[in-house]
Image (cartoon, rainbow, N blue to C red; front, side, top):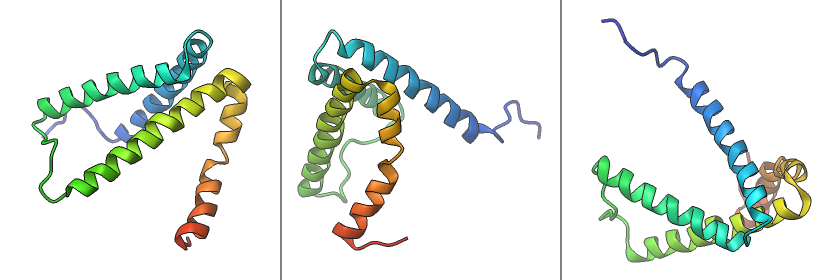
Length: 127
């Protein structure tokens, strides 16, 4: 059977599209942070993302509530989202406005090493 679309390089194409979208987003966040508060940018970004996910979940008929997760699990997910998508992104956008995208990118290169270091200390995990 002949395929109309060849998906053999789908992962590589998706990776390049993600990198392109991320670089465009960083440029937009940097320019917007000169005029608007980072907290307001994050609130707008997360509101748009919430509605996009709700529409996506509706279109693919995916439930918002899973019976195998408890209320405590959902509270943990919400707190984690608020910390990561709220405070973390606000600090990222603030850093963009203060030191620029080039320096923020250099600092982001150390992120995997820092995460590994703290996972050893706090969780006792090793590679």
